[in-house]
Image 1 (tube, each protein chain N blue to C red):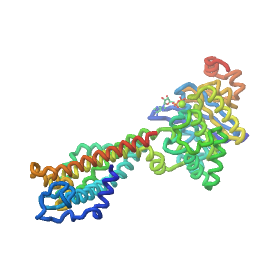
Image 2 (image 1 turned 180 degrees about the vertical axis):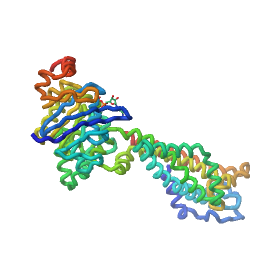
Image 3 (image 1 turned 90 degrees about the vertical axis):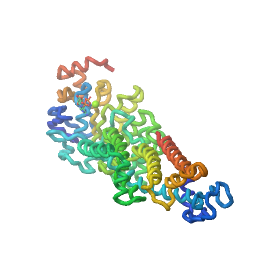
Image 4 (image 1 turned 60 degrees about the vertical axis):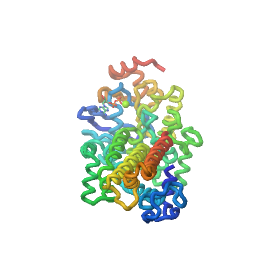
Length: 247
Length: 254
Ligand SMILES: Nc1ncnc2c1ncn2[C@@H]1O[C@H](COP(=O)(O)OP(=O)(O)O)[C@@H](O)[C@H]1O
Ligand SMILES: [Mg+2]
């Protein structure tokens, strides 16, 4: 399968402190890579570097084999989108959902008004959101709904890769499960690549095709979901597995 | 409340039967409610109602003129400083802290001496110092938003910094800066009136509430209404402004 994202030898620091050390991994088309690791291991920092919000000290990020430079073009920005952990602050509280989606699409894809209206309605339906979603402000939705709106915003600009940084960790179990199923279905429908960040191995096992384990800013092992959950290659991997109940 | 005042000020030339500067030495110091002069006349026989309304025109328009530029400039500079952080923030903080330590009335008096007393001095002075409060408030708010996910999401969509400041952050800063605007306008009105009262603001014979209060002061025992009426107008306007501020703040709280 074709590689969509290659992360090569990334070193990155925040405030002079080195956080990421020689981080390497890749993601193929129609694949969900689960990035696991304890809190503070550098997962969110890795997401920031890939999206371009944080400049790495060295190393490169390649999208379909093309190196992304420091200053990204409009198209390059649109091709990597993100769903964040905290639903409460993911959407600008002053804009109706319709406007948030329309702005994103008109800026990234230069679509006509009619096309935007049609796509917005389709997305809202696909995300199983209420009919009137487009006419409401973010404040009036539940956490789970906000996360699905954030996912809709990410999808609206037709990205190649979506990074989801613990998008369900603040949601109730049943809401969480529905969101995970949606992510899985969308991936199949669109052949998307997804980097799914979580510290919850149950979630990773349920959702991902492959797993990468991060510890202290390094990727210490990567492998297929099956083989990782059967027999982790590293001591830390075994530790992680034994510390959670199997689901 | 404010709307009524602005309406009256705007329509003053149509509703007033008297020229606010026309003297009528045969009809001085008429009490309010006398025939033909609803609020009476002053020591030079000028119609008080006309003067009050024309003064509203002057005072309110000086207030507005002196607020518009500082409001937008301060808000924008503050948002940029808060959004970019780092060095931009440090420079702006240095400037605001320096200026805020400087006594405002002293500056007004200095500028008034340079430009001569009157409307221009007030407007110029306020343009120099007025933006500071907005910059402070906007900077603090923008700094609190800069690392939120909705700002990061906007960056990921490739929106420019200018667009993020003007269209993502500004709507979130607007409610608070408007509340500041209302408070600040009330304070500015008081200083316009104070300067008029001290004789270094809007200069007579142009009607201004401040000079009306001071002209009436010498007759405070015989004709208290000369000072009380313009004084009441200042209080009325101040209350109206703060009610607008509160009302808008409530409406925007979401
Ligand atoms: N804004 C920041 N300032 C200073 N240190 C930070 C900042 N953000 C993250 N870090 C540090 O970077 C490390 C990795 O954080 P993060 O990438 O958020 O981990 P994870 O997402 O795996 O929990 C942590 O040790 C954290 O203390
Ligand atoms: Mg994290």
